[in-house]
Image (cartoon, rainbow, N blue to C red):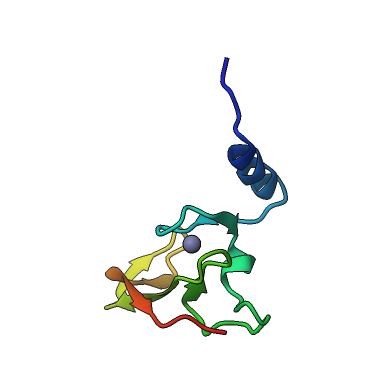
Length: 92
Ligand SMILES: [Zn+2]
């Protein structure tokens, strides 16, 4: 039998709500993506920037290059060739 920890239960609940769960690489805090997209004072962070609501570690996701792929219907669609994660100063 699989034992579900309270933290795992929380992640499952978040997924059931249709949100995307995110975990902090520094402290392990798990929350939905929306919580990581806001500063402690409630300000929306710049696009591609995420901050842990528990330990305030902030990261920025940077896309490098662009590769064009064709969707099933033949339409071109741009995808990044590489994604880099950078540590940035935390927001208030
Ligand atoms: Zn954290």
